Image (cartoon, rainbow, N blue to C red):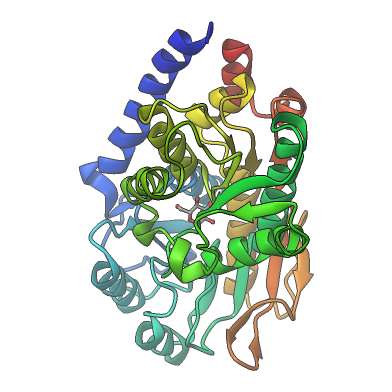
Length: 375
Ligand code: BGC
């Protein structure tokens, strides 16, 4: 508890920065040049970057990184977020096609809802890259680039087990499971990866999901909204953990939801369980360093954005077999439709706990500052 005060101060500052960015009214129409909404100029390579809502810090960071990277490469990028939802994103993608971009980079809100726009892109000879989230219900997709999502889930499952072993005494351990938003195809991959590790331990009785809620549909968190996770955790505490009872661990698919789960437990006046996360968001870096949140995942946005811009340039130049440094090309794991595997460049995620935080973040001066401040 000795560090709680500074944690709260730092968290408040980070949360404010995040929510200011998240609420930024200027979310649409920014670009590396000042060509927003204008027709692409003839002499510059032009890329349309359609991003979802800013439901986690990594999306916020990606915006500036894309702008910087496009500028550095001398290409014209239009980057737009769709805070208003799926229809807004459909319109933004349609406008980018209309404006004659050569490549589309899409981080979808709902990857299954862009089929019409992707068909139009294909017909116009535009190359399409799915960024971070797969596009589905379509065959009009050229590449997928992301951190290995199933691998993220496996790391989360592993971290939950390790955290329980280290902190929760003898098994069996009571746990609860949370998933991401059902419209984001990543959510099932994260959950599948985690259950790949946890299911055998549920089967042999080491882990007990006390609420009995083990299906993805029961544990999903609509819209990745922290309020939904906090409400569900509060409801679980009331229904399943009366009196002094508390789960020993909670699988959380990302940091935003992990902190909401921790908050619900604290508000119920109970000790914080082992909680996982993902994204290395500022506030969670602090909490992990202090041991309040057990783990997070580092999916460094810098190499992902750089690799995506490199890939976009190669595709715009007509390169038939592009190469991406630091990523593995996989052509079987992800299907945009049954029987339609997508060429996927996958980067490797890293697990972070307080024991290895300083090592994992050593090349990220911002996160290193947070680690040092939280110690
Ligand atoms: C991303 C996660 C993120 C989540 C919510 C997912 O598609 O892969 O990193 O936490 O969306 O924004």
